[in-house]
Image 1 (cartoon, one colour):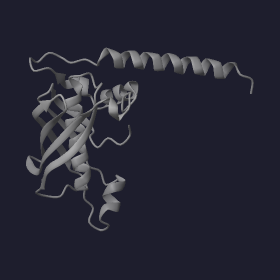
Image 2 (cartoon, one colour):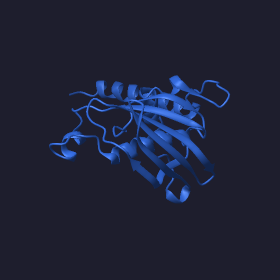
Image 3 (cartoon, helix red, strand yellow):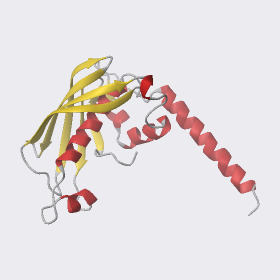
Image 4 (cartoon, one colour):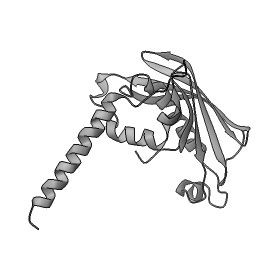
Length: 190
C-alpha cells in the first residue's frame, strides 16, 4: 500500500468525479533516476496517479469490495513536463460505468495549465481471478484515511460518505489481534 502516487483527495462525488493532488518533490527517487540531468516527474507515474484516483472513484460505491484494475489506457496526451516543486491536480470524471467496468476521463493540471489528458478503462474482476480482496480492508481503510477521502467524500446529493462498515470491522479485528499477539509475546520467557 506504499506505492500511492497521490497525496490527498480534495474532492470526491460518488460515481461522478474525484480530484486529488500530488506534490512533486526533488527528494523522490523517480525524479532523479528517470532522466539524469533533466529532473521531471515521469508520465507513467502521472498515469498511475490518475489510475489510483479513478480506480478508487469507481470502486467506492460498492464499498471497495470489487477487485478493480486498470485495464487500458485509451488516451494519454502530455502537453508539458512536471518538475520538482510542482503540485499536480488530477481530476477523474466517470464517463461510463457498467457491471464489468468503467471508463474515466482524466485531466491533469499544474498551476491551472493542462498538463495531460487521459482516458482510462477499468475492469471489475470476478471470482475467476481468485477470491478475496486485492488489499486487506483494514490496510486500505488506513490509506484512505491518510489520503483524506472520507473528509471530502459525498454522494450525488451532497450527503457525507463514511467508511464502509466491513472495513471498520476488519480494522477492529486487526486491532484486537494485534493486542492479543502483543500480550502473548510479553508472556513468553526470553
